Image (cartoon, rainbow over all chains, first blue to last red; front, side):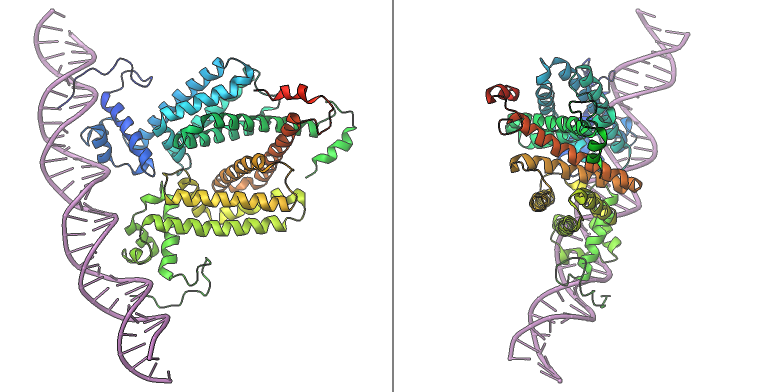
Length: 233
Length: 233
DNA sequence: TGTACATCAGTGAACGCGCGTTCACTGATGTAC
DNA sequence: TGTACATCAGTGAACGCGCGTTCACTGATGTAC
């Protein structure tokens, strides 16, 4: 018995008029996968049951489980990127960029626990389309972060080759923090402080380390030969 | 047809005289799980087939899949801890501690690809005995690292509460590096440099950040009231 | 040293069940004229 | 505006298969006396 209510004008995603069943299947997949050990072990029958559909409807919308998961990840990535860009812009002052952005991220993770959990797990899964989609998303997050924080003047003047590995660490750690936050959301304030400390430690460390290796252009007037000795090993 | 060769006097693990079939099952499980999306999706029949045993032999040695995985993780953790402790002691000089330890870890990861891969995946799996075993192992690694690096004088004089989050980041990143190394082992030298840069950035950052927040005891003679302003936000 | 017995590792048949996938079908929606 | 037809979302029966688990069994190893 096909249901004939029109789907709401704008669904959760940007895709125009996504079929109702498709949306139901994607949501059900995320819900189930977050409870299981991995997304691939959700059975098609179980999925259809969770979505309230016939077990064959899956084949109408997806060619494989991987295709389903890929679409879930790309949807999730779009929302995350947009939200982060917005959060970076709305931070009232430079000092509040980190708390604002991390705060928004923690809240977003809590509001989208299931898909966050799934993404966290699949990230280290076997190489394939899903892992690739997650890695592409993380790379985009890093690109956005670099460009937008630089635009706000929130990053020290360091070469991109120095900044990128640091941003990668920050992204990794914030994701891990989100994962912990989902399981224990009562320490939100402490997490914001921890994130700020991590951000500062890395940035101050990178700036100081650069100053130590090329001090000629900076505050000291030690001859460069002497200070270069510090760089050995 | 029971095989009657005696098992080698000392098996891969410390457990005295582990039954041959048990060893075969544990090795097979690691091999299979590393190929699949997650350890839990290895079927008992598949496992027995891979181990070359009857599908019922599993029940002779393990009460559940979780029990099997727990034993695998604890075995792995023991080897990793011992090797790391050894590597820290054998580093010829202070400057070479990081390259020695990270180098040993990368080689170990490569030599134990499968179990490394499985541990990496299960770490963010659903809460339960396996994840707990992995978290306990990581905590022990952090404890060892703190105690042994401090004993060698390889850490700056910072409070434990400052050092521990930094060690956690380093452990996370080295694990991630091992994961990448398994898939692209040709960049070993670069990885050692990257690890050293990360270690230095974090340590220098932590020391500098502390110096900035409590400068009274240090090089400047600014009145503390003034410098404390730097700590706000 | 020999014997009797318990324990242990491994075997093979049998069971009922949920699974993925196929097929032919229904009814609603969209489009060409 | 109406009609005819194609496309699309969803249905339900049927299939063969691999699965986890149980059971009663075999033969080797270890131990008490």
